[in-house]
Amino acid sequence: MKMKRLILALMCFVLLATMALPAEAQRRRKRSFWKKHRDKITTVAGAGAGALIGGVAGGKKGALIGTAVGAGGSALYTYKLRKRHRRRH
Image (cartoon, rainbow, N blue to C red; front, top):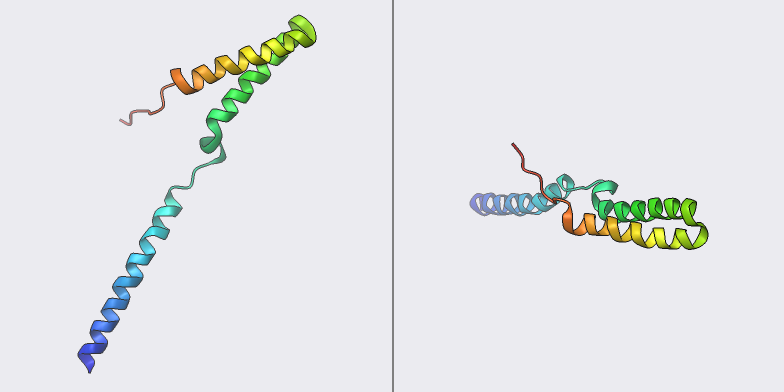
């Protein structure tokens, strides 16, 4: 009878320990707002800067052209040219 209780307690402990591991792993991987949305923020900032410069230089039509050029340039940089992974030393 005591052996059955010991085996049951050990099985419950192992089950509880394996259920706690995924919860621990999730806490360590929480990313900041910047890390989650970095690409989108960079593209929108480029579009805004292009609209501002285009608006100053050419009015309403210049703002539209500046927005398109700024968004295109920042998207090109963000998704193609920027290095994604840094090497850790």
